[in-house]
Length: 155
Image (cartoon, rainbow, N blue to C red; front, side, top):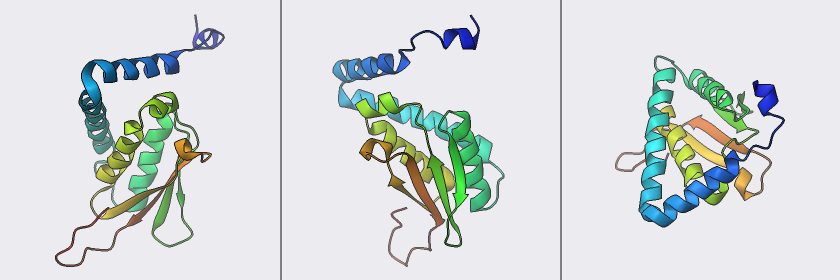
């Protein structure tokens, strides 16, 4: 069948993902599930780092990240904020929502991934969260001021 033909039949991938996550937790414990999420995060970080390599400036990096996320099905876009130097990464769809509902470690991992990929001089905050009842996930992104001597940046 073509992709359109397959689209006419039930799709249970979300249900399967939830079952696998639940069974992974039962068989390997929370530590095993966390290792799985961490491995996924490392794989995504390597891919994203490769795709963002050589891009200068926060705007270019956020726009490239949004394009990557859009390719992955997140209906993502990068919008400049009303304040200078602020960007918003907006994700109007979550292709892993069923998995994330059963294991919020995926959401934690995505936020950590964005912080890692955009770099230590960038502050990333999730301001809207689909799983918290929002209509989408939205991240406020801005260049962080340099930390004061003797302090650490929370990013």
